[in-house]
Length: 482
Image 1 (cartoon, rainbow, N blue to C red):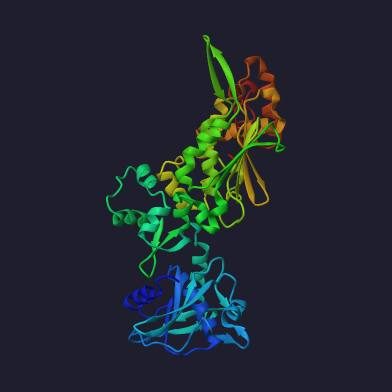
Image 2: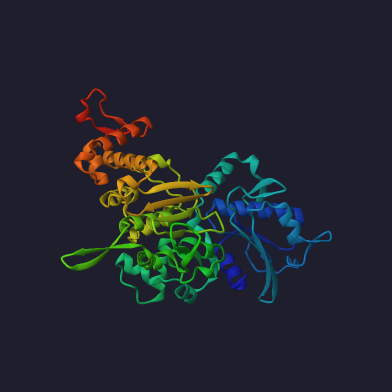
């Protein structure tokens, strides 16, 4: 622990013993220490603190520094080092550090305990909590136990700590904070103190108990100058792979964007655009190139992958794969809503704070409009609707390049028809033979083909007629769930 003396002084000057702080003189017992660590960890969670502390060498009544003869770093339980013995009996979601120092010539020993995640902290499979200055079994306090589970349920990735014990200069060096001010149209403050004020208000950084700062997961993932500096986030960089042809046999280009998502988002879109296959047109003797993919749909699909990924899945991050005939954008995690209702259901994100800030920074569109825009953009180019698939713990969005109706697979036609019905329904409209022909760029002479597609969609229970008794030429259809 850096600046341990400053940390101890900050704590004793500003806090008495509570649910996340315990002062001791010389009293020490291994089992009691394990119970106290579990109790303090749960206390930190309950009080929304990143850390809890056990400090030997401080009077618990006066908070005077009295020193101790307990050196927590050298103690043993039998022949086993105390730290190893404690870790074997504490739940795996508890992390802690041992350290010691001298203050005013007096010996101080400290255990710093991280806030637990995923479950209640336990020692020997028993939960504990501090009531006043005493450690009690958690099962005797069901109301507090319920509060803890509620905290665990709502404990979000964004508020976690990516890097701790940093000072002002380190924050300004490691974060591209200028993007925050540029994208919010706020003038960059002239001094560091006011810059930190905004970063603290947004939850990009937090202030520690010792007066130093921590960079949150949200701050790092969005504004890091290099994600490699953050061990748990280094694999969350955006990776882009371009293949030769329609399969993964030959990679022609590969790049990993090492910076935070906000700082590289527009740059990443430009890089992807430069790799996309294009077609050439000649108009009035002027040669022009045209992308085979709608840029709006690519933007929304990439933003969706960044915002909705599951950051608890380690070892993988957002992946963009470009083929001659399609783009596949994959992210760790599965959707929180049913895929078939992705157009009309209220949006849900496992990273709400991240999503909110990215929207305010204009990285993505208003809440809930992303899929609508993707579908409409694909319809405007007469291509297949964006497809969403789930593989194990990953979600993949596929955008097909321009192709004629006759070249589309049956499944692609049915999905596009269904998405067409969903988009029109949320706009207060229905689909008809005419809208299907317009959507796929078909001539009026292809009316029979449009009718067959509608019938297949009805048979597959994707859409249904508004009124089954209507004459065939006037039939209108809506999604099956409407």
